[in-house]
Length: 508
Image (tube, rainbow, N blue to C red; front, side, top):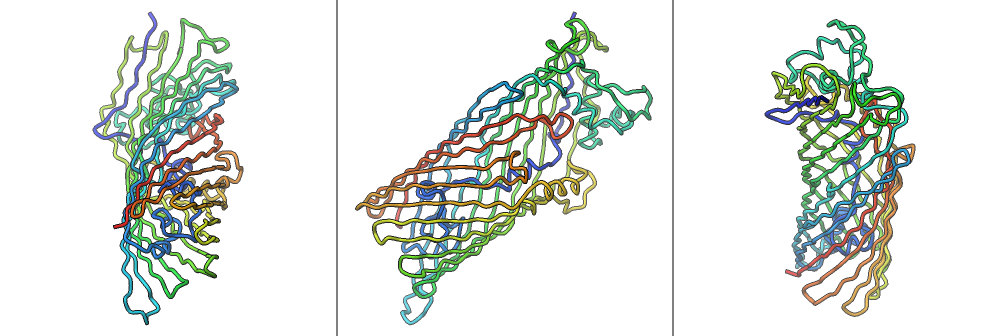
C-alpha cells in the first residue's frame, strides 16, 4: 500500500514563513498609482497643479490651491492578470477586487486682512489605499535541474543533526525550522546518522525533469492617512506639509507542489513520489513619514513645483503557518504520519523597515479655461532601503539582517519616474489623458522590469458637485523565484493591471 506522510507544524500563533528578503522590502518601498479619478486619469502628474486630494501625496503645497471647502470619495475596481512562463510552460491567472480607494476633506481659511501677504491657510485630511495587495500568480512546468530538496538542504547543511531533531521546535530559528521540515519529511538525509553530523544529501529522485507548480495569492492593503497643512503667500507661492500615518495588513499564501513520477529513474513503487509545501504569511504594522513642498506661479500660465517625501519608517510584525505533506511509497513509521513538535508556539520579534525617500520636480502649463498639461519627474534611491532590529532582540525571523541589507544596497539602484498628464475642458466637461513610466529598481533591470502605464478619463461639473471617471492600464515584467535560496529558478511573470475609478466631489 502506498503511504502518505503528512508533516504539519501549527501553533497558538502562526510561525514565520520566510526570512525578510528583498521582495519583502520592495512590497512597501514601491508606490502604486492610486487616488482620485482625475489624478489617475492624468497619470498622477499633479506636482505643480494641486487642487486635488491625491495631488497632496505628490506635493503637499497643492492643498493651498483649493479655493473652497471640499469633500471627496473614490470607488475603485481593479483587475490584475499575471501571465507566467516557467521553463517554457505558460499559464495565466487573474484577480478582481473592489474598494473605496480614497476619502478626504479640506477646509480653506481665507485671510480677511487684505494688507497681509499670507492669503490663506488650508487644513486637510486624506486617506488613500496606496497599494492593493489582492493578486494571484500560478506557475507550472518541468524543472530540468533542481528539486525543492535543494531548498531544505541549503538550510540544513552546516547544522548539527541533534539541533534539527530537537523536540523544542519553537526555540528553533527560521532557518533551523526549514531544515526540520526537510528532515522530518524524509526529503533530506544526514550523511552520517550521528548527532554531530552537519552534512546532508537529498532523498528525492535524481535526474532532473521535476514537475513543479507554485500558486501564490495575496490579499490586503497598504493605507496612508495624510494630515495636510498648506498656505498661500502673495498670489504666486504655495507651501505645504504632510504628516503621514501608514497602515499595512497583508496575507500571503503559497502552495508549492513537486512530482517525481515523470522523473528519469523514478519508480511508482518505491521512494518519494510527490510533495506539497504550503506557507501562509500574515504581516501587519504601521509607519510614519512626512512631506514638504512648494509651488510657484512663474506666470499666470506656467507653474513649477518641487517636493520631498521622507523615508517611511515601518514597524512590522509577521506570523505564519507552514505544513508539508509528502507522498511516499515505502517511508518508515506507518501509513499516515502526523508530526507535531512538543513546542509549537513560536513568536518572532518585530522589526523595522525604512523605505527610500524621494524627490519630485514638476512643471505645468495652464491654458486658461481651455485646459492644461503637466509633467512630474521623480528620483528615488532604492538602495537606501534597510531592515533593522530596534529592540536588539536575539530571536528574529531573519538572524542576518546585515547580509540582507548588503543585498539591498548592492542589487538595487536609483530610479527615475516620469508622469505626464493633460486635460481639455469644454463647458462643464473635462477630458483627460496620462502616461507613466517607472524604471526598474534593480540594477539588472530584470528581477523587476520597467513599468509602462497609460490612462484616460472624463469629468462633469454640476456646479457644487463634480463626478469624475478614469481608466488606467499598466504593465510590468518580473522574475519570480519560488524560494529565497536553494531552489531559485525563476518564472517570468507578465503583470497587467486594469483599473476603473469613480470619484464624487462636493463643495462644502
